[in-house]
Length: 289
Image 1: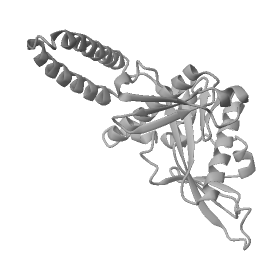
Image 2 (image 1 turned 45 degrees about the vertical axis):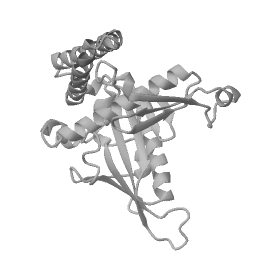
Image 3 (image 1 turned 120 degrees about the horizontal axis):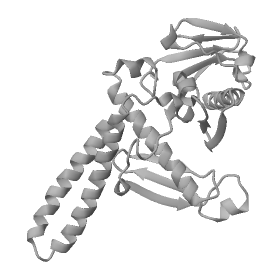
Image 4 (image 1 turned 180 degrees about the horizontal axis):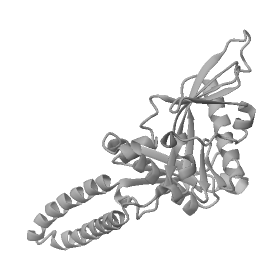
């Protein structure tokens, strides 16, 4: 995150230097002064944010709420079904742990409560399933995968986003929620120009609430990008399996014909998949072995 903000500061400094040139032109001097004031303000916000982050460098993300996203990967429709089942498993797990669960999008949930990130951060990665799909007529075992992303919920002070880098659009929700949701443009779509990331949010009835949800999702994804950049250098982050750094390799296999869950990182297996899929996820972590 600090690297990302430092890049923004450097960009602002260049803009400031370019704008100062205009001060010598009487026809642009007033506009230049206004622009300089705004650029300096943005730079100060970023620098203050970095100072606070550095002051609490040992800040424990484990206590943060999380944004958990599951996406079907290899396996077509079966992978999408698998993603839905994983999302239900994590929802049930959170509820059993006394955590609060809020649906953000079709495959995204927010989990709030004590030690949310610390509890689920090891679930990030590729989850493979081996089973006979309901649509399979020849009793053949299929292999599908879904990716799980577990990101800490961040505030603006953690990762400041320049408002000028955001393209905002409001639209009418096409989902459930009653006539009010469908008739009023409460859903939002934001695009972060530097990264190209596009986020939509439409679960709330208020445009303001949906915009805040979208911004939290964006901060989390930008944080994930920074973690990926640093993982080759920061062993502590690599060992926690945070973000997408380990997605190239499967971390768990759910073998339904053999009723077995295997965690490949610690070479350990458990039986009784129905119970596990209902939220009783084993809590043996890679960092603990």
